[in-house]
Length: 106
Image 1 (cartoon, rainbow, N blue to C red):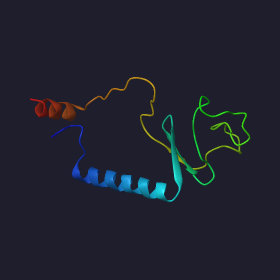
Image 2: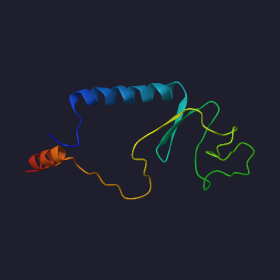
Image 3: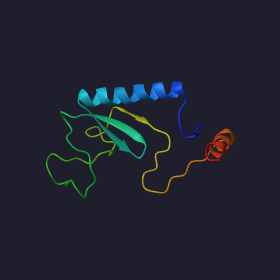
């Protein structure tokens, strides 16, 4: 077994999650991942989410996100484990995962 693969039950749940994600996008939900916080915005109200190198804070229609003020705070979000974004990433296997990895690659 490939230790990086999912079980059949996990694959079904992950497939359901992907379908729900696509259904949300069709409904007009724009997702933004901010350092592990998955935020949801109404795409009819929010057109873009970017850093200050591509948007100008001085524009009338541009606001600082995550300022925790009532006017810009995202109200629909949840946190995702392992939220690193700009540094090297490593995976540590469990003893069972390491055994499966060695068997898979032998």
